[in-house]
Image (cartoon, rainbow, N blue to C red; front, side, top):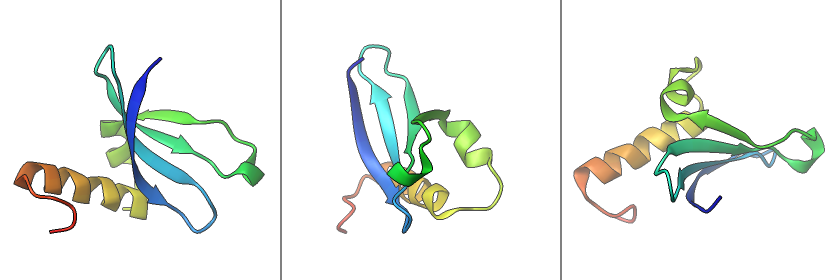
Length: 78
């Protein structure tokens, strides 16, 4: 399954979150890659479910920033 992804957030403990898109189906989701020590597997999370989680986490804030950047049509460096 070919995908494109963009890192959203890397936590201090090594977990990483990506905004990902499956190229053939165009499905967009959040991919969580846990740190090696946790032993957990990768998780594909629907964007709505990811944003609906409680806590307003740094990774949720990173996704909202990226969505804002895309809506405004500007570069991240701006």
